[in-house]
Length: 375
Image 1: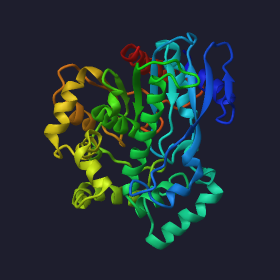
Image 2 (image 1 turned 90 degrees about the vertical axis):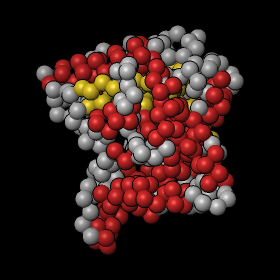
Image 3 (image 1 turned 90 degrees about the horizontal axis):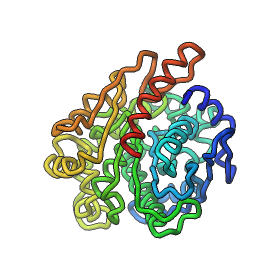
C-alpha cells in the first residue's frame, strides 16, 4: 500500500457525518454508527461533564472488510487529545484489508467527536490560552490545540481516570453487543483484538489485564508508540497538554492518588476490589503493585506485541521495555528508528516525493508486523 497516496484519498472522502462511505477502487466501506454512552451520574463523573452532549451521544467509524461474513474484529484506540480521525484512517484501512477484520475506531471520552467543536477551534481557544498564561505565568508547551484538555486536567486530575473509566465501560457495552449479535453492521462474534497507540495502549493494557465480562480472554493486543506505566510517560507537548497540566497530573497520580482511596464509596470500592481498578493502579508506576501487574502480564505475554520508536520523547522506548520487557523472553518489544523526521505525535508525516517513499516503506513495515500478529 502507498501510505501517502492512500492517506490523501481517505482524507478527501471521510466525514463523521456521513452514514456510509465508499472508498474508490475498494470493497472496504466505512460506516459511522451511532452510540449512546451511559454517563454515570455519581463520583465516577464530574457533574459539569455530564452536561456535554457530544460525549454522551456520538458516532464511531467501522471499516468493513471485503468479506462481510468475517468473524474478526479489531478495536483501534487512539492517542491523548486527538480531535480528528484523519491520522488513523489509513491505519484502519490497512488493518481491515490485510487482516480481513471489521475495524472499530472508538473515541476516548471527551476526544475527537466526543468533545465540543470549539475545543479544536483556534479562534475559540486562543483567548483561553492567553488568559491561562497571563494568570498563571508563561507555561511551556501551551497552545490553542491543548488548552481545553490542559485546563480540564489542571482543574481536576481525576478526569484522566474518569475518562478512561467511561471509555472502558462504553467498550464493554459495545463489544458485549457484538458478542450477543446486536450490532447493526458486525456479525455476532467474540473474536476481538486490539490495535492501540499512545495513551490508547495504556487503556488497552488495563482493559486486557482487567478482562471485564471475559471479553478479552483470547484477545491479542498490538501496541504502537505506547505500553509503559504512567510514570515513564512525558505528556507535555503542544499537541497533548501543556507543562503545567502534565506536572499537575503526574504529581497527583504519583503522590496523592493512593492517599485519596480511603473510606467507603463506589469509586474507592471499584479501585480496591475490581480487577480493572487494580490494573489501573498497578499501571501508574513500576513499583506500585508490581507483583500483581507482572503476574498478569506474564500470563498475557503471548497476547501482546509492541513497537516503540527510538526518538519518541512522549512515551520513550526505555519506559515500554521496563514495563513489558522485564520478563520478556519472547521479544514483546521491538524498537525502530525511522530514517526521516518524525515524532510521537506524527510517526508517519506527509512528505512530497521522494521523501514520501521512506514514510510509505516504514508504514508498511510497522503495519505488516501488526497484521501478522492480529490476523
